[in-house]
Structures are given as C-alpha cells and as structure tokens.
Amino acid sequence: MRGQKAITNFLSRTIYFKILWAILVILKINPIVSRKTSPLFYFLLLYGAAIILYDFFTDKKALQNKYIVPIFLFFAFMGLSTIINYDKGLADNLKTFVTTAIQFMVIGRVDLKRSWKDIMNDMRIVSNVVIVGVTIVSLVSLCLLAFGINGFYELPSEDEVMEELIYYYGVGFGGRLVGIFPNPNSVGAFCSIALLCTLMNLVISSNKLAYKIVYIISMVINFLCIVLSGSRGALLPIYICVFILSFLLLVFKFAHKKNTVFKYIKIVLISIICVVLVYGSVEIIGSNMRKIPSFINAEKEAAFYNPDRIKLIGDDISLFKDSRDRTTIWLIGMNTAKRKPIFGVGKAKLYEYVTNNWSNSMIPPGMKRGSLHNIYLETLVAYGLPTLISFILLLYFVLADYVKAMISTKFSDKNRYYFGSFVLIVLLFIMGNNMFESIMLYLSNLPSFIFVLYLGYIMYFNQHDLSDNGDNIIYRYCKKLSNYMIDFYKHISHRFAL
Image (cartoon, rainbow, N blue to C red):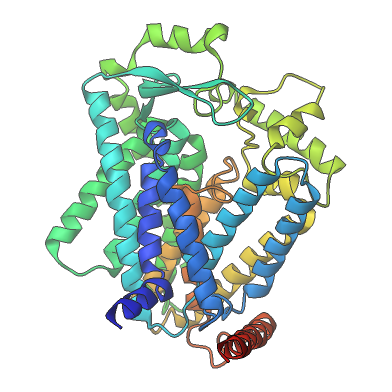
C-alpha cells in the first residue's frame, strides 16, 4: 500500500520530473559531459510518458488549461509535418516531436488545484537547481580564464553533416569567454537566464541574509560571464529587458501619481537611464577584463581562422567576424520556406534541404548543424506556416492575458506584481534571444526547459482563480474518451475473469 502511494505521488506530481530535467539540461551544457547523458534523457522520456498516461486516465491536469486548443493545434500541425516528411529522417523527427510534447505536457503542465504558495515554492526549488548548476559552470569557466587555461578539443559529430566537431575552452573566438560552455553565445544565453532566475528568487525567497548573499554572489559571477562572452544575441535582449523591467516596477511605484503625462515621461527617462547604466557597466567591465593576458592568444587566433581548421566549433565561425552572415542564413531559410510553406521540410535534415535549395552565395558555416539562428524562422522552415501561426497565437493569448492580470493586480498586491514582472522578463528574454538563436524549442537544453517551465507558470497565474478554470472542449472530450476506455477495460477484465 505504501509503495502504491509512493508511485502515485511520483506520477501525479511533476516537481520530481522538473528537478531531474533541470539536472539533465545542466549536465548537457558541457559538450563532453553532454555525450554521457543519454541514459538519463531516455529515462526521463519514459518517465514523462508515464506521467502523461497516468494523468490522462486520472485527473487530466494537463488538459485543464484554457490554452490547450492552441497547444493542441501546434502539436497537431507539427505531427502532420513529421508524418508528411517521413522520408526526411523520420526517427529523428519523431524524437524531436516526443521530446517537445513531453516538455509542454509535463514541464509546462498547469495544475490549477494547487495553491499560489505551492506553485511559487516549486518555482523557487527548480530555479535554485538551475542557478546552482549554471553558477558552478560559470565559476569553473572564470577559473580557466584566471589561470590562463585555453585550448580546443575534438568530438565526433552526431549527425551526417560533419565527421568531427571542434570546441574551444577558456578563451576563443577573438577574445571571448568560452570556459567549459560550447561557445560564447551559449555563455551569454545560459548565464543571462541564470541571472534573471536569481533576481526572481530574490523576490520570492525569505528575507534571510545568507540567501541574499549567495544569490548576489551568483549574480556577480554570471554577470561577469555575460560581459566577457561578448554575446550580442544575449546583451541586446538584456538591455531591452532592463528597460521593460524598470518600466514595470516604476509604474507600480508611481501608480498613485495623478499627472499621467508627466508620470510616464519620468518613468521612460528613468528606464532609459537604467539601460545606459547597465550598458556602461558592460563596456567598462569588459574593456578592463580583456586586458588580462589570457585574453591575448595570437597563436590560437591564427589556428582558429586558418581555413584548414574551419570545420565547426560548436557554433558559427564567420558570424563572429561579420554579422551579415546571419542575414544570409535567414535568406537561405526563407528561400526554402517559400518552396515548402505548409508543412516544411522537417527538423532532422533541415540543413541538407535548405542548402540544396540555395545557390546564390556560399553557405555560412553557422548553418552546419541545421540552425537558422531564429527559432521562429526555423519553425516556419521545419514545420510550416500553420505550426508557426499556432505557436505565435499561443504566445499572444498567454502573454496578453498575463499583462491584463498584472494590470488588474498592480494596485492591490505588491509582491504578486513584482513577481509577475520578473517571470515575464525571463520569458521575454528567451523569446528575444531566440530572434538570433534557435534554442528555445525542439531541444533538451536550458533555454527550452526554462521557456516551457515559465510559460506553464504564466498559464497557471492567468487562470487559477477563474470560476470556470480548466474547462474546455478538449478536456471534456478526452474525459469522455478516457472514461469509455476504463469502462471497456473493466468489462473485458470481468469477462476473462469469469
């Protein structure tokens, strides 16, 4: 009886799965360690599938979500694309579909019967796993910098595009921090996410001084890594998020000011000053830190830009020297999107098909792992326009409702408003960063995990206090279907028992 209760608890609550998935994506940050995570990944796929099945035949919490229709449409069109493109790497496309579905239905699951306090506690726990993991990786990376440990290593490629991959550690890519991350852009994206999660935990955690000190140390470490990475794809969204966050917090602070025009002019000016201060800090810290001798390594630079050594270094090469190549990648993607606008070409062999359709110029090296450096364009090319539209509609409905909810509570609940602001900023950062990257969907990595996790929390906050929460057409039909299947199973079992 006790064992059955433990199994039920293990399958009915998703916090255990989220913690394990958080550990998985932390382990996958380093390319070498990432190769050893397959057993944990496949175990979590089975565990996630078990949670979905158990939920389907019991409470159907994943379906008690007013946003389930756009989610369902997103996966319906994605599934159709996978079937239609069966000749373009079916096994890999199915793996991508299953991974994405499990993330949305388990990590992003909405349990409307749980209290606000319980949900916030879960967020704090999972965010702490991410913060600790990324901070350790960042600290090790800074230690490599401090001791002047730099170099590169080769790993066999996991796809058919290239035989081997070359990764740098320490400092590379023209004096940019790599550490033990795959590349400088990963440093910027992952450390920014950890920093924003830390800010959010400062809002929802206790007032104990020890916690605050630890969080502040973590923020300093990750901020240094962001600055030294020189990742424009991370820094630009950070500046935008600083402006939006400052604006939101100041709106609450000046909520009772009567002169509306003067109030908002003041808010905008202060928000701009905050952005300028952050930008100035990045420039001053970056310029001084780059005077460290370990940032100057002419021999490695010569080896890096030697055409004979240009294979693939965890990310693009020419994009670090000329950002116009990113525009070329987008043009290459749009060229294929025009040819296959409805169901795309599938995710597995994206690189092969987009490059075969392009003959106007040389293919930038940054595409050699199939990345189009824009998740929205990549969704269009891989899965087609209906999939992209359903995904954008999902984001629109969720975020529009969330902003309305924040406006309705801004004068009555300070903690909830501040907390809501930080959650929104984390999501906006990932969405903004993925205007230049393709890492928030279809992958088992940190950005995709945090994106789906926080999207799920926002969906909870939008509807947990509604009188008709959880009721929708898909939930009602699935409830009838599961009850019919249970009754049928009982009937068959009874007949065979006789």
